[in-house]
Amino acid sequence: MLGDASYAVLKGGIPMLVLSFGMVSWAIYRGWLSGDSVSEMQESIAALGEHQKDRKRRRRMNPVMDKWFQFGGGFYGLVAFYTWLLLEWPDVQTFISSMSELLFSFEAGAVFHVVLQLFIDSLINFGLAIAWPAYWLQDNRGPWEFLFVAYGGYWLGIRTAQYAWQQGWTKAAAEGLQARWKSLIATTDRE
Image (tube, rainbow, N blue to C red; front, side):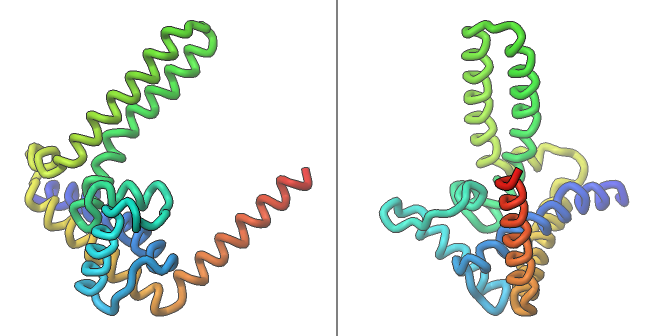
């Protein structure tokens, strides 16, 4: 029992807390989301998701936010995004290692094969990520605990992002990161 709970917290709760905190903080900072409670914030996420479906009116966002809303936004979309990351990471590692090997063999057909394989794997991973309930519920280590803890992490991430915004921490952190980025760019330009 304790093993299942630990698994749920480590594999579901903490990642969802971190992802929802990061995504919601960024969206609040950019002015895409607003709300004084978690339910208002979830309504704002749903409204933004509907807005993003309309190609004529959609906002230009970064690729991570686009992927979240491509998966549906909200809890479902964030778990789908998380599942996609888990599935995609080994394929990207394989692609990178294959490319380094191919650089020494100079076979054009092999390069095409590796790129095609990555594309096909990415499509399969997208389909599996969309169907994330089947992916996570097939695990025998407390799948329902996982879902409840993951939702708790999602909720807590939204609430923490709201609190950080209300305290001014999000804006201060974003401005600090932007200043650091500019100093890195300036240092690189001087060299």
